[in-house]
Amino acid sequence: MRNWLSDSVIAGVTVAVVLLLAAMSGHAQAPAYRAPRTVDGKPNLNGIWQALNTANWDLQGHAAAKGPVPSLGAVFSVPPGLGVVEGDEIPYLPAAVAKKRSNQASWTTLDPEVKCYLPGVPRATYLPHPFQIVQSQQNILINYEYADAVRIINMGAPTKAPGDSWMGWSNGRWEGETLVVDVTSLMENTWFDRAGNFHSDALHVVERYTPRSADTLNYEATIEDPKVFSRPWKISMPLYRGAAPIQYAILNGEKITGITTMWMDATLDTGDILLQREVPIGDDDTTGTLIPKMAAAGAELLIETLDRLAARNCPRIPQDHSKATFAPSITPADTEIDWNEPAGRIRNRIRALSPRPGAFAMMNGRKIKIWSAEVREDLPGQPGEVLAVTKQSVDVGAWQGALSLSEVQPENSRRMTAPEWARGARLAPGEKFD
Image 1 (cartoon, one colour):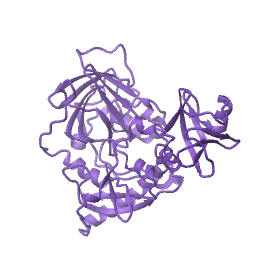
Image 2 (cartoon, rainbow, N blue to C red):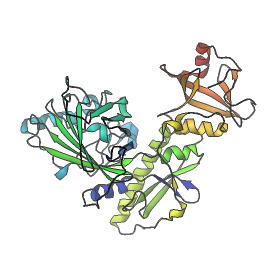
Image 3 (spheres, rainbow, N blue to C red):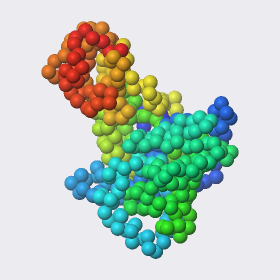
Image 4 (cartoon, rainbow, N blue to C red):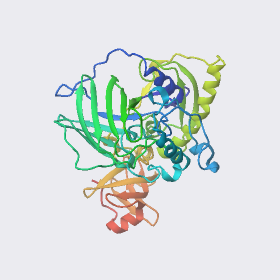
């Protein structure tokens, strides 16, 4: 993912116009792409991926709508979307239509997502959260950020499930460049989206993951359920290799980020710029607080872009690729605090990785996730050394300055104030983080 530069560094986030054009182009015939190979010669799908669409709201095309809590305004309103269903029709049996409508009318209480249940397949793929594919010769593991859901895809001889489960039973095989996954034994308790689209315990899903560039996969899922649908039907969408422009804007100490709408190009994030809007980054902003601000700005910019495209007065500005910077995926190595960094940089890391995956430090062999901290310039000390334990904070030395930790979460424990943790751990000045 690339960050776009104007007067100051702007972390570019491609919003719905790009997604709209990407979705349309996803149905076009693309040149054959051969993915890099693993040691056993199979397409290498390893990495962090995410769908960037509104399918979790409604698989079918839908207009913008007010959210369930009017007082929240646009914060939880329904964004518009083109839909990902082939033909935009879900072939319900007549008896199932009434249940779908009932689900939709009461989705805020009935949707399994509201109850924090595991999402099932295929919904886990297009929830607005990334997931990681870890590939080996015998199995492929998919680890989803949402609810810590996990799937193991058996790549050997097909096996049968011992029973139904939330994420089902997955047997995989390769068809050329495509990973084909046959998913059965799914519980009936999951939905396809917030619009109330549902299935029974007879659900059978066949997924297809096909690399189409170094940073994109084409995802297809054919859905069959004779108890609910009159025929099989299919969804398809692009998946993008996970990248972190918002996180890197905070990590790098930027004061301004932004939203860009751009024209779809053959490669990722290289199309002509249409419109841009700056979004200030506050000193206390985290990724968790910045994303809603950018979503709101993105919605406004999208409307303006569509209006100007319709009026044929929207600019198309070729990018100056020499001014592009890159925001690669966050890796596990990025989440560990290095006390030899400047205190300000460490605080930015904590903010950038909050709420997930979080920044942590090791003490006595245990992970300590750090939720919030402030920079102290007046406390000399060695990097990683506990300088003071007060009623308000735990002060730790860094390369330049120190950090006053205010909120932490010890491994296998709850979130708590840093002094509360220090009392329980009997922490004293002079001790050091690993």
